[in-house]
Length: 466
Image 1 (cartoon, rainbow, N blue to C red):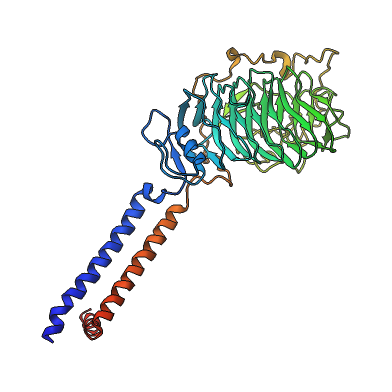
Image 2 (image 1 turned 90 degrees about the horizontal axis):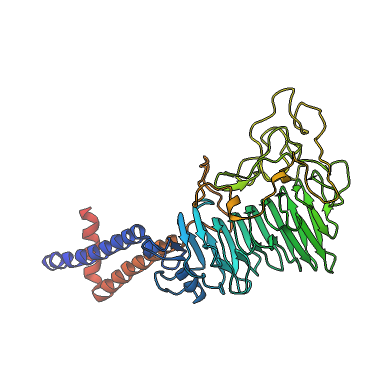
């Protein structure tokens, strides 16, 4: 009994130390996100702030995810904090798989100062860009676009504003562009350049305004689906320039508004119903297609951080879309608001009063207003083209350099392919738990093997003492 009493504290001390180590490891894992994110997303901040910076995170990713400069090791996802990222040099060319997610359109802002290009993908590497604004993007490294990707990129909830070299260049094998605006590009490029060699391109809830061309499709195959888009005042070229090179490509248009100097050029597009076109250049036919019709667009407006061309309930676009409309508009407002969804990227939230308004969802039966076009293609003074933009910097609709945000009740869009947080922290916790449990088992096994009789007596005594 004396021998057991002398040895018991030794066993108790060993188990107490192991248990204490277990508690400390779990506490450290939970309370220190740096430890949890050692192989997770890069949480980047503007260069003036202390922490991981955007250019270093891209370089770290290009190096296979190893630590670089101000950034630790990571896993191919960049999470950008809110703030303005003013570039003083070109960002590194992306040459490893990467996803970039901001904290909200209008909240995370990248300013290229008219000199520096932003995201350029040298191969099929840029998987996604979401929840951010790019303004004043320059050109360089073989690209003339604010975002240029050769991968099947998902772009969601993005604004490209006053780029000097073009908006978004998609890959040659498919892309998804949603809830996005490209406005006042000062170059002779397109807001969206879609070199459709193969695959499917889904363009939904987009506003393209004040650019040279809205959508340029030099196509050798593939299918481009444009749904609930508002493409207006792109006065240098056309709203949609579709060039059927070969391979039987298709451009489908549904629930969309075209109000440009010339709306369509090149090859014929396929109208899928309920489009409003301010001339007859697209060749749309069918009773649900509204040609030579003024959509009555309002002025370019910042709403919920993004750029939209609003309508009212007097517009022929009001409550007139097909069942193919997406469940939300470009801002994230649910559809429909007034019985039937609206045509275009903007959903009107103020419904027509009883006995007034126009559109299929209104109680009014008055016909849609029309606009006559002359041979020159200029718009009627009552249309959106009456004061067509020259895409100069003085025409900016934004009142302050940092693009003020109208806060909405819901959280900013979060792209399903781009997680806002990293799950590797949970794995770190579970790995720590498993390691400590194995250590406890190993410690018990060692003590039991060293002196089985004393270990058995200790366990019995420990059990009775509880």
